[in-house]
Image (cartoon, rainbow, N blue to C red; front, side, top):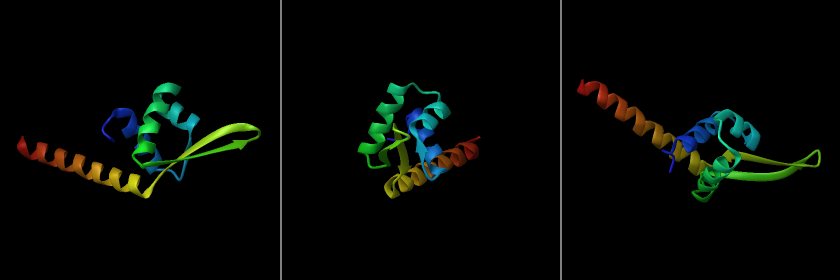
Length: 92
C-alpha cells in the first residue's frame, strides 16, 4: 500500500507533522489534484489516513492526519527498507 511513490511521499510528510491540508500535500509532492486525491482515497480506505473536512473563511478545507494504524504501517515499512539497505550493503 505504501510503496507507490506518491503514497510514500504523503505518508512521509504526514509522519512529520500533526496534520496537513490538501494544498500543502499537493504542493509538497508536485502531484496533480486528481492523482493526489486518488492516492489519498486509497490511504483512507486502508485506514492509514484520517480525513477531516471543514470550512475556513467560507472555503472548504480538507485536512489529513496519520491514524495509529497508518503510523504503525509506516514504521514497519521504513524498518523493512532499512533492512533491505543493510543487507544490500553487506552483499557487496
